[in-house]
Length: 238
Ligand code: APR
Picture (cartoon, protein in one colour):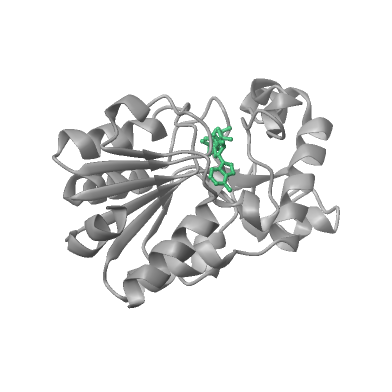
């Protein structure tokens, strides 16, 4: 049935979370067995408070994550979504992920709600750097300021232009597909509800239960995203 919905839809918007990148090798945050937040408290490490008062721990945590996004690559599922955009069926991707894998796989219309680990900027003068700096253990700007990743930290608001773009795309969707998110972080988790309120069919693909399953027209649990996208993609080429 999902295959038919995809084939008959006019405006498909994809919404991805960390579950989209676990098959690339990156950990997610809340999976019962391996999530990052099972071991660390996000408010203590992924926050402005940590950046200002615990900068060594902050930098070592983010250097680990930068190493991950530089070492691992998009998987087949990312490439299928990029292919569906080229074919005109996927119109936009709204992602909570900061790995840049959708763009690396070729997707063009991507709203990075939580920013990106691919870039850093100076906390003092704002100058931008590639996150390779962290890999080379270069943590300061030429002005002397501390370099931090271009990600939205707990305690910070989302980039307004990206948020507005994601809102406009969500309101145009007639099929809104969530891939790999527990939908537990606001305001990102409002987009599936806004799509639903605007008359879209809502599909949630997630290994575990999410907080929004109740609102979905279709929920697919216990299926890996990569596998599902490959099945759908094969089915549609016949
Ligand atoms: N296939 C399907 N689902 C998967 C897969 C997979 N291969 N791998 C993991 N999942 C599911 C997990 O069961 C989990 O429920 O993906 C979900 C990921 O949820 P989270 O770890 O909470 O990640 P996410 O929803 O993206 O978190 C949102 O929280 O910490 C902040 O800024 C961070 O963007 C992140 C936000």
